[in-house]
Image 1: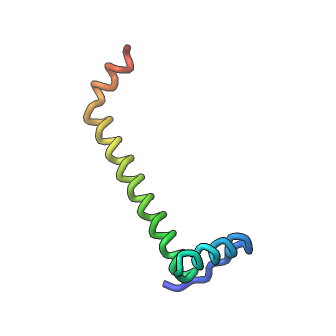
Image 2: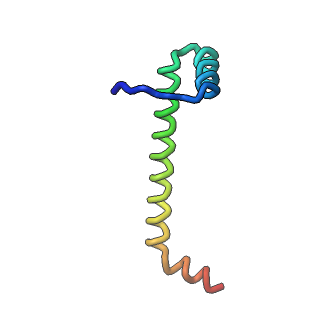
Length: 68
């Protein structure tokens, strides 16, 4: 998918500097950043779902802790 990304000049400059430092294109640097963001979101969602399951499965235990 192709699209135009409009960045503030200072953000674009930082992106350019980072891309040069990492020896890759600005496009690839943005692609890597977006993938990292998506991966983090997936991990966060997995953690939320796991915590929800634990609280649901052990609701009685957590209720007892709350009574103390």
